[in-house]
Length: 162
Image (cartoon, rainbow, N blue to C red; front, side, top):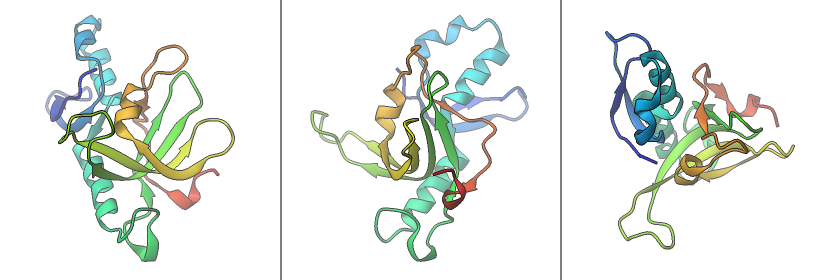
């Protein structure tokens, strides 16, 4: 899997490119799409745009301690919704934090932890952290990667189904 930074995609309109902060699409398969529209849709569903990434970072920076927006810090919104298209798992995410290397990774490796409401489809959603690296590698029962909900509207975490 490729982790691409600053990938340009047009979302169907070549006159208005969108910059992406991070992506988890398989770069080796990008030539296999039968239309530019299908390729652009695939890239958009498997990337996080810079504007959303910036909101996630700002929410994390507003916190004195990790966790839900205490004392009015941050905006309390889930700016990003990720889901498994072939399963029931959904992540409503409001923050991202840079963390160091995980055990077994080379020193200096950069990883990210996302915070939000995590629902693995088992009927017990909970607030917590999830590794972006693990989400990028996750495949559902039919082998499909986690996708970003392209129609998601930022929603307060407190208003999400629990």
